[in-house]
Image 1 (spheres, rainbow, N blue to C red):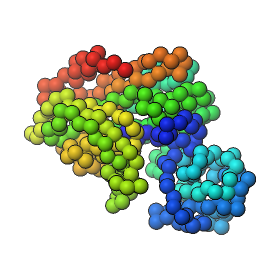
Image 2: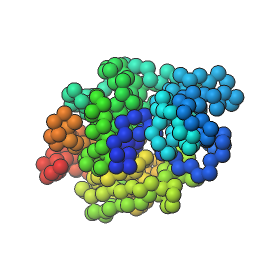
Image 3: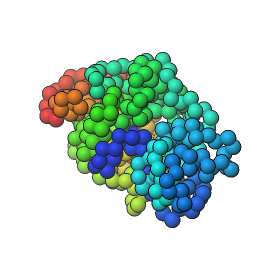
Image 4: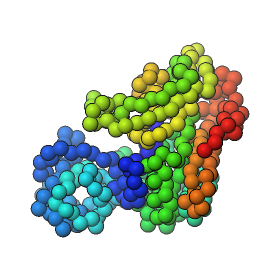
Length: 357
């Protein structure tokens, strides 16, 4: 995933920690230049041959007291240190041409990859993948404000071997308040396969949403998405170099009445996986998700964005067979639909039967 997938890899499989970090385009970066939001840009000029972790620890020694290489290594794992020119790991030998963007993390982040007994609903498991039905309210990956008790921490508790994989095998994510299906790699082979499927758009991801107003019957929304320049916590349709290409296909499944006003039940299919993509694209056509206060959605009927990842299809890394899984929406979305006489369970059953992956 909104769907906040961080596995867009430009069409190539790149199974390492850098794959999941936001790629930030830097132009004419100064050595040690500090961005307005506290990020630091480091130029690797003159550091050819140095390990990335040693370079960053040395370059920031005067700015961040007691910064150790092990702490820098954790920041790289978390995606807090990124390089737009190449993939990056702690042991990467720099070429001297790179610019590294560092987002210093608090001490709480040091224990973020610790196991926590987080309950996980595992709907499928084999030697290569886990398919998880994530509840609303569960954060997928440690981040500021949520360093522990995330889905990743739960994976490390229930499947300790996940520690051997970048980001514990997580290849895409859902927002905290989005529910539904997501896949996790259990092997390097699966990590490469799933990453490639996300990059070439062959992984099928379908989402059910309830939006404000009467949405069009069909829509292809192709608008670039980037950080909202007016509010850093939010994404927006952004033209120019700061916007990444994004495409969402939307179909209206029905019209509902919610709190005395019209709403639409829609299915969204992703061709890309940008941060908050569905939420931003639906707002851009005048139909924000119900409950999505960040993007102007009505909050009178549901306490979270009305978004559920209901169907996931992929090619099995084990044998290449196409497989898919479905998930009924949680009770809050079912109740919203039923209040207008819509049987979501029956509707999705019929829709699933009509889909050919």
